[in-house]
Image 1 (cartoon, one colour):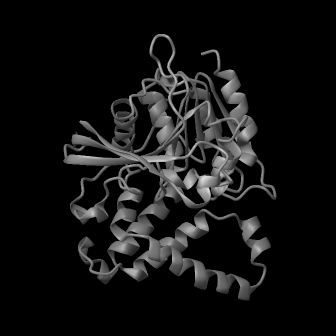
Image 2: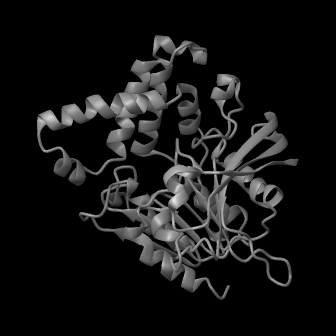
Length: 355
């Protein structure tokens, strides 16, 4: 496995003026990456963005690395916004990038990492969350030379990856923070939504078993519409679009824009990757302090299920926070608003500081 020396490419535009060190993009190649189902990728490209520099203790352990993992369909670069990075990475902030080494990977099947739309389409190996986490571990350890994490955290899919990191590599991190997730098998409404979306795409005649020449727009439109509803906040939608005309105008603009950014096969793979996710049997293996956070207006992880409240009891040093609905919450997307949950991150960092 060789490191691809593409370091030095920096993100530009508005990010250049950000009040933290310039982000740096790179690619690393995992050779002959074998998936849990036995399939192999001769070359798995893993893209990443880093901010800051690693610092080592006298024994050689990296002391300041922070891994942040994105959600389904996202990329590491999605965190480089004023609402997220601007609240965390600046001077004196909780994850001050002058003192931390921030790692933002693109997961398998996402962003600039290897994915079906690169050319293999539905012949791309059928990866799972376990494969994605193992690839992240290889990137962090072999690609970036990091042998310890100060913190592993993630949003939505990245939050589910955070649970898996904690039980798969229990001694590798000081702290864990999954944002917007459940630590159990994907079932109920969550699984139903995923299957409906996948079926809608695959039943679209334009999909052609993944060999489409143009994107299957009807199937993708159904998919994007469902995802838009599930990740929105009813309170905020009502406030922003209180009339029939305003809702219709919003949908006519935003849904086609989102459809134009999607690839049907990539979306199928991304949603199907959760099919074997189930950290529940191994929650007792997690050693690091863990704070799981959900918001009460999250339609993907509705609080009435009581799952996180129940399962956190199996985590030795675990705590669950349910953020009440307010003018600041944004449904499932609250996961990317440190202004809402940042104080709990501060408490977690303080609690795990002496570990």
